[in-house]
Length: 485
Image (tube, rainbow, N blue to C red; front, side, top):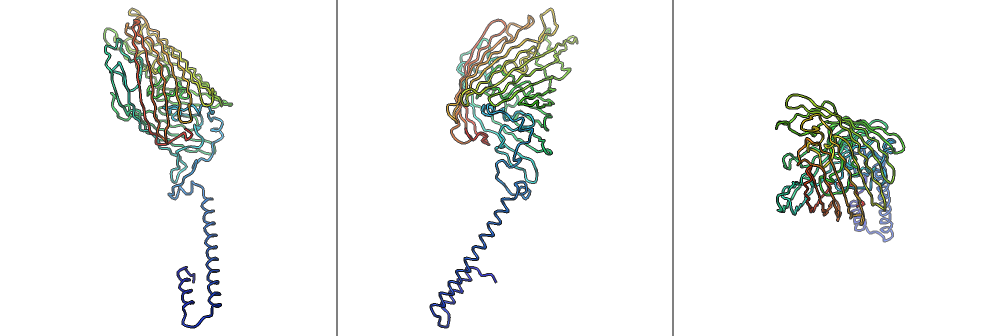
């Protein structure tokens, strides 16, 4: 029978206090034998513990997850990138250029390559091969407009009224930039991968804080369906800004689409996409609004080259713009555009991003003119043939790191639309934007920042107006994606 330490103690007590006389030598011998047995038992238990630990270490995290155990690993699975993901991995300069909007984390990538190959924040769903990261942010914006009481959460120079009509100041607090999201990653076969990504913010309709769908797409290897950033834009070339709208000249819109991408080797890739053609055309004939026609999807083509110090991207879009006039007549024209963007690391982690877009009928893609009805208009009051309006948009931003946890960006942008003789004198013509900020990560997932932006707008008649804005922002991310900051 196996003796417990308590039993052994009682035996020793009985031997030392027995009925018969015992010599000191016999007592010492008995105690030494008991100690030897205890030491042998302890060595046996240590060996068993070491064996159990070795078995636990040998078990794959996936097997533990199937039993319902919670396993902490970095990363849990897959433990390495596929060969295609390694080939498509983004360069260090693109990884280093982090923005407050974090749009680079949401964007689809060639072969679903992660922006961080360690998969921070992901965990393995029990009983599956699926990785999941549930993430989001709680955000507060304190916004002060010294001269305009009418501006919304996002600073859009095109919305500055001409004339302003008031010098009244306005203070606004908002949480609408808060977000929540879920990112699913699934290995497929020996080298494939699938990703499903969904994200909401709180820019609901009519200025409410109702949830608004930003992204909902699925990508199997390089085939993507759903709603996400247009293939015509470059999320890696955005400035690092606190304002939810961002610079006025950036191509930035999320659309329903079907996209196919493919690698070209050496860091180069290309993609083609068929996208929602919702045109932005708004004018009236004899006080009766025209009806927008969308006879074909927008077609976008993109070429990208990535290397360690930066990236370059060239994208194009082709559009069928059409309207039905109040008398039933139909008018249409071809819209097209090109968007050249890029980013490069210059000193340490400092970087520069640039973007230049030009085209006819691409106003719906540009931040300051989206939704303003400036894709196309009639040539003149006597010639109602439809003209795709020429547009030029250019911006640049410099990002400087004062320390690993503190950075600043200076951003400038300019947009110009060539108006037709038909359009009213008060129609938007051009605008400029400038911004300067300081962003600090004091501790953990908490980011705070201060930003000053200034906008100027001019309409077709030559009348103009300007406006400044001050912003204080605090945000807490549920998952800290960049532990070095």
